[in-house]
Structures are given as C-alpha cells and as structure tokens.
Length: 163
Image (tube, rainbow, N blue to C red; front, side, top):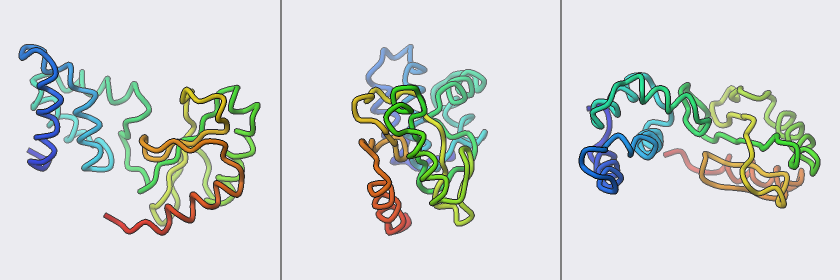
C-alpha cells in the first residue's frame, strides 16, 4: 500500500457513505484524498486506489484524466487555476492571466523553476459575478483578483512554510 494509514482512514469514511457493494462510488473522493497526500496522482497511486476500491485501474485513470482537479503529472506546491471562460475574460480574466504569467515567468501548464507554482487554465468556477476568479490547489477560491490582489496572494503563498 502506497498511502498512509491516515489517508486510508479518510478514504474509508468516504466509502462508508455508499452501499457496501458500491465502493467504487467513492473513487472521486479517494483520488482527491490520495492527491492531497502525494501532491499528484502517479500511475502507481491510481493503481493503489483501484485495488483498494476493488475496481479496474483503467476506470480510476479515466476519472483522474477526465476532471482537471486531478493532477496526473507533478505540479508545483501551489497550483493556480485561473478561469478563462468568457464571463471572467470580459471582467479582467485576460489581464489577470497575463499578470500571473509575467510575475511567475511561466505560461499555462508550466511550473516555476523552484517548483512553487503551476499555472493552469480553469473552466467555469461558478462565480462569474466575482471575476476574475482564481482557484488555489483546488480548495481556495480567490475573487475580484486585481493585479494588487494577485501580488499579495503570490507573496502570501511564497511565505507558506513547506510541509
């Protein structure tokens, strides 16, 4: 087993939400929990989740590659998704994206040389009225992101102690 006992306990809590013969229904939660521990979903991690849930590895891989919240390749410590859908674009999303690219020295789907930041394009985050919107590590939504707010966020994230 590749994951910590604490991680398997968290997965077990998700599995318990479904009928005993439908453990595979917890696959999305299990992948998110595994990714929280490992930082990304390596093929062997996906295989471990598949084995744990009693499902084919290809089915787990299909889920992991379909949704953009799962990282199937290593990413920086801080993955920043910026909404690039039209409402965000019309409300400063292009400006925010260009500012991030310039500040970080990377383009979309790239990671900074120090491994701290990965920048990706995101789909609608359901907060069009808060545009432009960023999502940090799939968990923290940041709204109305002016250049000054982006600079403050990058400074804050840069100061976070490594785990």
